[in-house]
Image 1 (cartoon, rainbow, N blue to C red):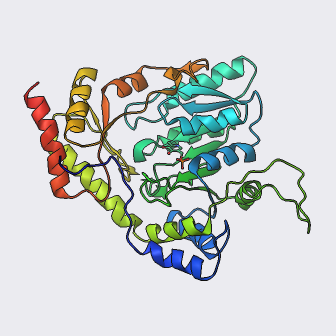
Image 2 (spheres, rainbow, N blue to C red; image 1 turned 135 degrees about the vertical axis):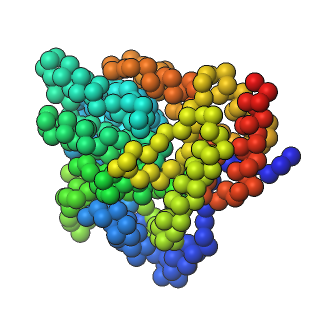
Image 3 (cartoon, rainbow, N blue to C red; image 1 turned 180 degrees about the horizontal axis):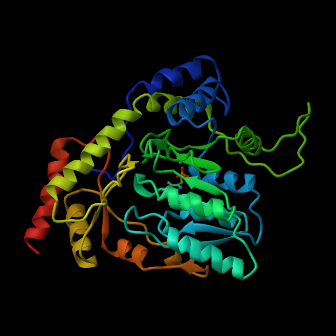
Length: 371
Ligand SMILES: Cc1ncc(COP(=O)(O)O)c(C=O)c1O
């Protein structure tokens, strides 16, 4: 059996060890310390966000963002149906109600036309939605101009779920820094990793201050332990922040490598549809995704890759089709369902070499030649 090719594995440099060693040498093995402060500063320097709080996961960051914007029981939250469940779960933690919005086909993100329709429909029912959770899926920025103007028109703030999309830009500005609050993930499969971790960024200091407060059990200022509200244990450890410090040093190389993978696929697999970068957009190409003509072809390719010890994965199963979420209201155009049926995420790690890429594309070519 040939060696396994994973979808999106971690890609370490070795330099992470330097920061981890410093944490050990100084005995700062806690969820605070020089690496935590340093990594927050690194993220601000890279994204140009004014403030940052590093946390235990991207999911925790979304949860705190919702709390900071005071999303409460029975509030409604607009979110895409074409995303990972981690975008939606924190809305449920808050006992709020998600409203699912389908995708447009230029970027596969939230469709601005359906978004406005949903807002108008909710207002008609007498309830303005509290927040828009906007996802930039697979590294591709959403239609920010249109969505920001809707957000302004109806005064509904945006939380940007840029879990997959650190380093992507829209009009030369980093995604995650457009909304009231943005979040990133450093899970093991992301463009850079801390093994598990996340960040909340904002241009308002009060938001990241509140995030840090809530993430450390909401301790009041007192010499003893005193609490006036419910808190969480969501801070990032100084060890993991050390991994992040090493990783962020090479983020530009990691993005370049993933963009190279994507280019290779588009050139070798020109019979398939790949999502193009709109002209005001730079995508980190976190995952390369390919759209086939049918579910049957998609499955044939996926199973052939699996036989060759190559990991691939169908695109997200839409949230409105998930057993746990299907009871919620949704505004649909069938795009997310089509994407789920026909689309495939191809191996996209920044550590793939040309031989790996050749092996993957040869396998796919063989399937279509025998089709
Ligand atoms: C779109 C999206 N949102 C949120 C998350 C959650 O991030 P984490 O795994 O760090 O909790 C992820 C990834 O895992 C994601 O892909």
